[in-house]
Image (tube, rainbow, N blue to C red; front, side, top):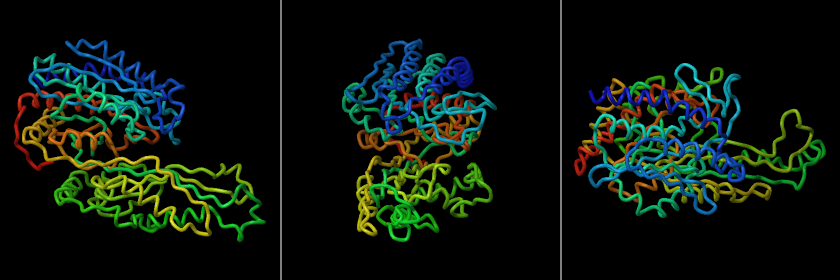
Amino acid sequence: MHNARIHDFVSGMWDDQIVPQLSDYIRIPNKSPMFDAEWSSHGYMKEAMDLIETWVRDQPISGMQVERFQLEGRTPLLFIEIPGKGEDTVLLYGHMDKQPEMVGWAPDLGPWKPVIADEKLYGRGGADDGYATFASLTAIMALANSGMPHARCVVLIEGCEESGSYDLPFYINYLADRIGTPSLVVCLDSGAGNYDQLWLTTSLRGIAGGTLRVNVLEEGVHSGDASGLVPSSFRILRGLLDRLEDAQTGRIRPEVLYVDIPADRLNQAREVANVLGSSVYDKYPWAGATQPMVSDPTEMLLNRTWRPALSITGADGLPKLEDAGNVLRPYTSVKVSLRLPPTLDPNLASARLKEILEKEPPYGARVEFEVEKSSQGWAAPSLHHWLADSIDTASRDFFGPKSAAMGEGGTIPFMGMLQERFPQAQFMVTGLLGPKSNAHGPNEFLHIPTGKKLTSAVAKVLTDHYSNRGDPGATDTN
């Protein structure tokens, strides 16, 4: 009976309020500061936070306190405190800043254009992760509607996660007394292996990134006059990247960027490969006859969760094709994004990356690597028995099959920060980013039925947390 009431309440909230609110939110181009240096003067971040805060304040939650903070020169943070029973605290986390537009959207779609089709809400930021505020409060309201208890809840919504959460530690310190010591952390910013069951994230990769620039001239010169004499900045850059990555296999060369993969995570990868089968890789929009880098699905999973990997996410110094004259260009720059194993120190990795790329530049060219992003990964602690059982039961109750767990290849800096600050806390890291949802890319979408089920599952876990407060038991089933 409780499950039915929770499901009906949550479904109604999604249809009547959450989807319309998210549609308005998608229309706002509130790009993270790394992608919009003028974010403050543009006002989009304020507009998006205004929308979220207004909705929050309109909700009939007894005793709720809502405050918006914006320390000098920093992005805004929304702090929501909801009283509960007992002395425990649950911390629920999300973010409201977005990745940039990206090219390749379908003709009828766009990053700032909400479109609902086939039970999916298309547009930038809905699933990553503008829905978090709405889902968190809806889960809490669903319990009140069903007469079920929960502990005190603190909801934090930040504005620079996509830039590495560099503002968040200042807010955590500033609000330390207000936050308290949570015994459970719920994060709704992660992925899902499919839309058929509740997925728990057991690890997140770190990241080291920045801009690599190679200069050979002060200005461009006629390529017929200079080629063969002046070295190509592109060729030099290509060679520098080869110090880091084997161009034939994609394997990262420096062994210092690897860690030993725990045995339980190796076993988990094998289990997930059996569950997902070919969907481990066929969820991607492959072009032509392109194949994965490896053929074994288990190795694919380990490559995207526990091993370093390089992406070049942008370039400068290259004119558009229609503007490319016979000129030997003076420089080439690329944006380097190196994903790191969950437990690797990102500061060590960034320092090593800078050393590798700048050391002994070919031809004495001016080579500079500016570190712009350095974030710690995260490896989940073992689950308490009650939480493992609760997550599994919630999956069966609202999805059908039992829950599943795997590592994710993305980065949520907040998780590492929180585990260091609250080492005794339990973590439920989950999300809506399933196959083809394409966060950060074109045609990003939120799967609405999964949003309803996930919100209901969070409600179940919140009330189980209250019922099992103080349970010291742990298990390694995550």
